[in-house]
Length: 88
Image 1 (cartoon, helix red, strand yellow):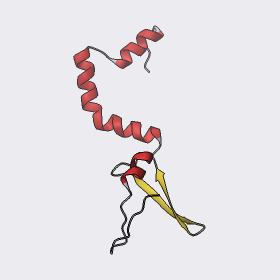
Image 2 (image 1 turned 60 degrees about the vertical axis):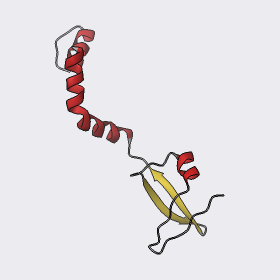
Image 3 (image 1 turned 90 degrees about the vertical axis):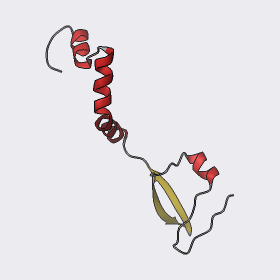
Image 4 (image 1 turned 180 degrees about the vertical axis):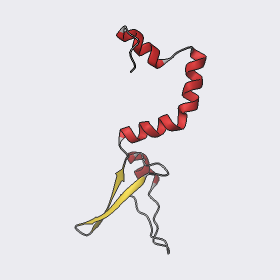
């Protein structure tokens, strides 16, 4: 089992093999608890809907540019599939 040392500021470094095994990346949030005398760390992941919403906000310009370059319009495509011009 890998070990780590508590610094004078009460910080620890997670060993690389543990980070790799759990896919922990910089910026990830860990819940910290105590269970039966043990420190327990749990990775908290945002809901998929939140991640997708953030991604859409952050890439809106790029997606519009890509759609224009490709000559596509998602809303028009869906209307075409539906066979009408109703709003989505």
